[in-house]
Image (cartoon, rainbow, N blue to C red; front, side, top):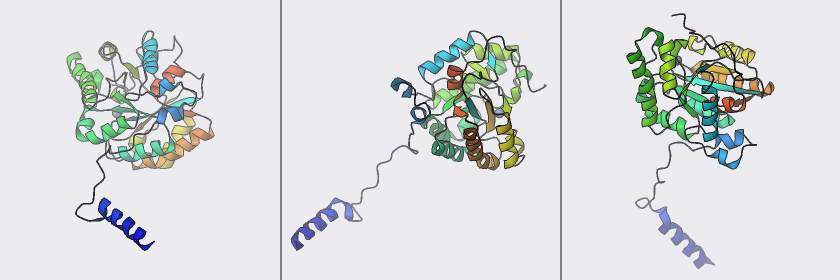
Length: 284
Ligand code: ZN
């Protein structure tokens, strides 16, 4: 019996007990890759679980169907009890906290990323993609697009798509104009890039740091089936947004509203035809 223990101890020593020969864990992905979508869509077919860059072929086809009748949306329809949480201006220093909350809660979301932010925080951009979230376009430098010439606008819009593609995400199918500022040239350019312009139903105004309670209240009081909720994971201090997010998710669940990505909202609940097109929201 003693010799057996000795043999076991020897094997343990030989297999890595010694300091000099200790194996370090092989480097894996920086974050665990989580399968958000099969959990969030239990009725989905197995093929729907294949998500590249947070968008499935079916969702992409759904965007094409909406692009056939409008260039710009601010909501889905009320057919299903779904809402879309969206985060703008990232990635930034608070993005990992936002991702951690969403992953913990198994909540999908859409990130409208800026080219400049991707350049500053490329690892967080890759984390967002690897976790299965939808990546969308929010220009390179966040200008009032309606103030720019068409070539300048093209550089902002195409440049952000290129920055997104460059770190491994598919070319984005969704675009959001900074400040809600756009004109006919913006719409032409975005449409030529096969993107749908996505404004919002609810502006939490979290960028103004109105307090966590106020952000939660604004998000939940405007949340209804088909709503697109605007928040920010970057562009300034986002501690209030981070603190508000778990409470918003809980509140949505109490209202029996299911968070989905914007492409899933468009697939399940496309906006009805004939809605007035959203107008330039910036007033500039
Ligand atoms: Zn923005």
